[in-house]
Image (cartoon, rainbow, N blue to C red; front, side, top):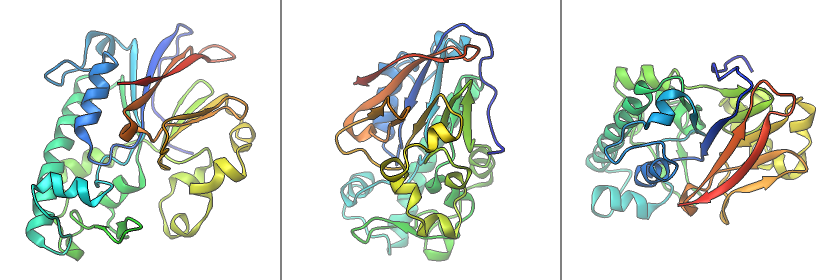
Length: 264
């Protein structure tokens, strides 16, 4: 992969807080950040985040609620993705929350890292209509399908999201360890690998020369899964009110010191 973020290079330990796919559940996101000691009650970075001692990693897919119920709650009624008034309302609310996250990151840019998910990618390149198995379509930001275009300030911000973050030999990415997992083109949506690699070819992490990998994209219905044998964690479990804390020393041969799953 070609994109990476500057991370602490010193051998001393840093705490990394990895939070799985947001999907417009910003209430849980802020609750997780407060639980982890990363955000103040008014949504500002805490002193450990400002100092770099705590590193926040959001694993992508900030937008698009995952269910009809979530959309209904968002607009306060029965959401219909074919109704332009509904899509405009859903888009406006999400844009307001995106700006809150952007402002949080701007106050501690070296400590708050955001990975580009495939749902974030279609915000700035609306080439595909994403949806759920139940037929719900995420069109609120697609002007070709009755939605509204993301404003230029948010396009610029989302366009700066990382494809991956590497801290020593630890990789944080949205889908998996392969470069193709971070390219959201036509092949991505027909390939089995993005949703199946950890079941069919979990050795990819070792083959990529990684000490450990942390990934989202596939929802973990029973909470975060950590596979120490194959050295990876699947953390798309915000809906279960879980995030992953990791103590990492980037300069050490074995960078991952320890980890724990936190329920908030």
